[in-house]
Image 1 (cartoon, rainbow, N blue to C red):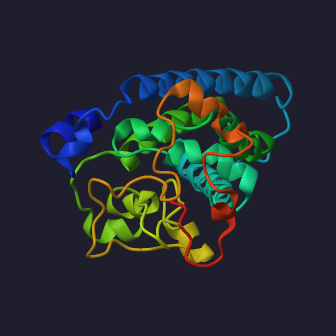
Image 2: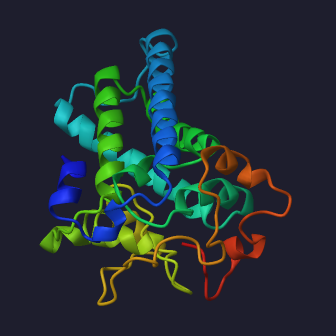
Amino acid sequence: MSFAMERVLPYEVTWNDAHGDTVKDLAHAAVYEIANLFALVVFIIISASLLPEWSLWPSTLPIAVQFLLAIVIVDCTMTVVHYFSHRVDWLWRLHAVHHGVHRLYGFNGFIRHPLHQALDIVAGTLPLVLLGLPVDVAVLLGFTIAVQLIVQHSNVDYMLGPLQKILAIGPVHRLHHVNWAGEGDVNFGLFFTAWDRLLGTYQPPQARKPRTGDIGIQDCPHYPQVYAKQLVAPFDPDGFCPKDSARASEGRQIT
């Protein structure tokens, strides 16, 4: 549905055009889904064998309440990982793969280095595993995260009214990907803006809107657009992104 709406109601028409990134993005999506499926299998094995009787999870609550609780927890842990991925050099080198794009559309949600994805999976699921999250809630959560990543990065022109102050999608998340000097280091949340408000990194939609040429990494406008090159980019001794950019305390240029 989201991909169809990008054609019917695009936010930026040129973002629907291929930018020499189609093969790379499809590879990212395939690896992302395979890794998530593997993580789900591991989660089920752990839940079934290691934690069969011991659980702190409130499994007697309605599944809808359990699901919302899981969303809040995973949103918190993944937001924290995302936040530090813009501040710790080795994390940024991995995370830069996600930002080394020139347009925003649904597939951007799946573009990430496999090692950073593994970190996201561990950070997002480990607390839930230790709490004893039921498998059915875990499956629902995994599906919802995948959908949210598509919606969050989709090239659909929509406004949510008062909800855009709560939900981390659309106009709010686009500001996270801009390459404007001193901008972009905001709105790290996956589902909600609450954690950004606590971190002091929430920025509401503004008069200046991201358009063609406004997306990417300012210091690395020529970030590699080939999947294999993106896999090795974080380990390049010279680095495709200046090391100091990931730690700049003033006038940050990392998006």
